[in-house]
Length: 244
Image (cartoon, rainbow, N blue to C red):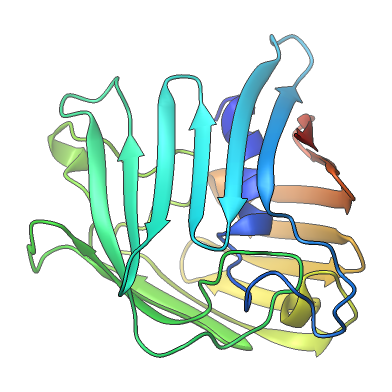
């Protein structure tokens, strides 16, 4: 995983992958929104710095790393997600996230709402593809396939977990004040046969510690201070981002 990918992962963990809010305001009304365009750089010893751009708002989430781009745009029924990878033979993967009911959580500073119950389906309607996802004070998901990656098609971004034939489950085991609203506290997440993670949201920071195989092993620290985001991993990767 390259530095730009890890940077995007950290940003995604804050603004999308850990999921949604009720529009960017905290329950107390005092938390700033993370909405805007963020320019980031990631570094690791012995490697050249790499850059990424994240654009997040109530109706969209865009990540660009070099020539690759992930776009998620709100529609009348959910989100249209496209992963464009010029190195893949057919260029991009597209699938639709459909919301079933309204949001289940308030996430304070995070502007994009993807809490509640969702299904993900390929645009071609193939029944062999798709996921079911749920985020309340518990979280779970199960996937078949999302792309023709085994046929040379583009995979999901390398900085996101591989969803193919995957299941996960978890819950919030304690609550704590956080700029991330209802995410505040300690979460326990597990993917059977792969690994488990403990994720804590407290104040203006997020800390994750995972034990398992390959990319599921290690720690991540992310901290938000106004229009600045910074963090590091146990693998020696450091990143920072500044809002324009």
